[in-house]
Image 1 (cartoon, rainbow, N blue to C red):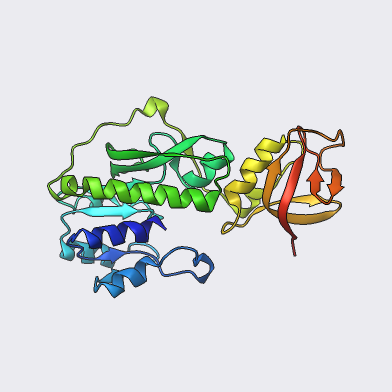
Image 2: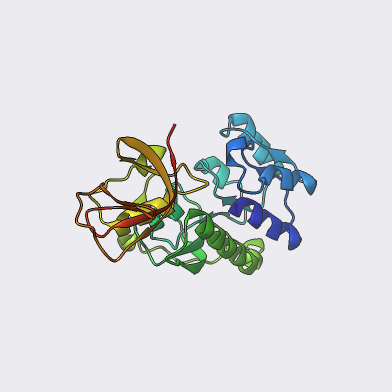
Length: 272
């Protein structure tokens, strides 16, 4: 989502975009705009290797980029590529660094019940999300936010950052400040299996997991009455039934006991 949004902002600003490297579109990930299609619509050369081969690196060398900008690119760029950008190589990361370095920051901040996150533009180095910061913007997390709504907020922050910072990049290398790595936190990638609910958790912790991995992500899942269900939406309640964790307190509304207060299930489906 942020990739296409930032590319659109650069096009609107009249940036000289020599080429775009991205990934082939995945039909299973059709919830965000295609970077490839947006580039082609604007007559920008597009390359879609699954990983950068020596031939790709030679091609980037021939392009002779003044600036390299990575926006949610899934792989670290090799040092030999970073050195090709005479005015600097930069990355936009979906958190307020140095917090939540690494993969899936939007999902992790929700899992952990954070009240704010952000987006950060920083110099790229050999270490993921560790380079000096050029520009940042904080994003408030509402209690009702889920992974999709928060992704949109963070993408909007990324667009705002690039609009403000573009003159610095074009006249770069851009000035920046070091990250305070004593405050750094780092999280790894998440898999569908990480969506498993433990009913012994309290209702708030379960709610945070559900909203962190709801649609378009694979969803949180659990056993209820011997059947596995995927829970898409839920609401923590301020009362408890006294049933053992995982017990069904009511069917309509659908309320389940947890290790703390009860949880109301608002949208679910049986897992096939």
